[in-house]
Length: 604
Image 1: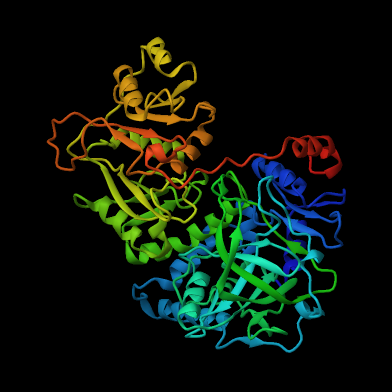
Image 2: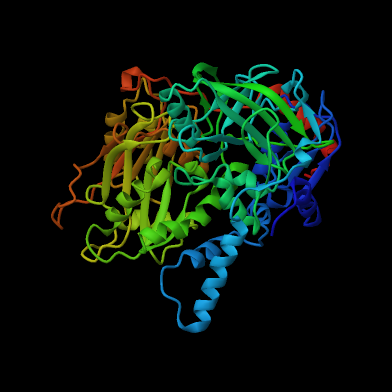
């Protein structure tokens, strides 16, 4: 189903009971963030899209959290369930020959429908709603209600854009969702990470000595178009072709008024401009989807040449931070859509889950049917070599009968089947540029865990801890256990060095997986423990094994276990890059939102 534009999608959300209109006056400076953060982490019944119709200092309404649940993400694709898009793509790319004439006709119809939806070329229109108002004389970003999301952010940020560039050599279009920091009314910082298509266009332009790269930033339109900006497609594949397939019809385009680019004709707002591939300014900090502030760094500068928009436009945006938030559900759509492509290359894969605590790239759980020794490793290495899956920092491989979306079932498989001396693979390789724990920027240690059943081994399980007083003597009172398998202790790094503390705890909790957190952490919040353990660990530097890793250890060798130092690191730990702060909202904003809560009309 294709939506005509963002308003069409808003009408659908409202009809489905998935939208709340807020007429109370609110500030784009932190207040909208605090409201939305509570809604996105609250009960499902109150987790709705929010349309703020009265934003201080602007006449433009703000739409946020529109993709913030599985239901709304499916509705964005015109579906009832995200699994439908997986089955749709799986059917299209199925390489098996159809059975009989009926199957051949059905396959041909599917392929023809896909080609028709994508079109045989750009569908250009001469008049477009996104250009009902054209501003080329001193265009200013000050007209837009751009959010300042978190207290320590470097400034206001555009967070839900479709950033459109063309390869300066081949002319192929790239669409990316890169955050944009507002420096002033005429300039933005373009935060495209080194692994992304836009950054490659910048490098090619610099090599070709091109003085400028045309850029357009589209806001709004069909939600499938917006989502496709975040899709990890291979290089030189136009993201709007995927959007067209999802919509079931081509994306309509119109030529920009000041740049040699085309933009979606149904957008709410378009910002046109250019960047000099040799001009960079400090961007950040930014409260990011990792739950930490991304530190300052140099990024290109976009200079604004025009702003066009609909009459009475709507400004779509999102916030990111400590999961779960709206971006988790956008990532879940990516996971479900790209599962058939993983299975195309590795047919043994049954299902995949990227849990919220892993913030997309820190943990991927995969189920498969192992057929030979090392089969789980084959899957790990295959996925590490598949597009942006190369950035995945951790894989857990389980048997096909384990539901990867049931984290308790996955944990049970890990604690039952994993010998941490024989079933762990540690590698070095590229990681996400936002991974603050990596030994080097964008490069660090990664882990693969084979949690499939082993025919030659009995399941293992540590004995319940008895010597609790002894553990308290080591870790003070801030420790707990989970499922007679994991011991979590929040201890100060200065007085509790990692390896010595872990080995001391093993004396009283043999066989337990030990996790060390900073002294201020809450060991009783399991989601927080998992998020910190996955985000703060470099799997080469920050782990201790009870016995050396040896995939060929004899069957009667003692079962190994692992200790994880998930605390903040500094130069003394071999981490000279600096360590980010957790994202925490300003206390005055928290109090203001609490006092105003009933006026928002959101519910309890």
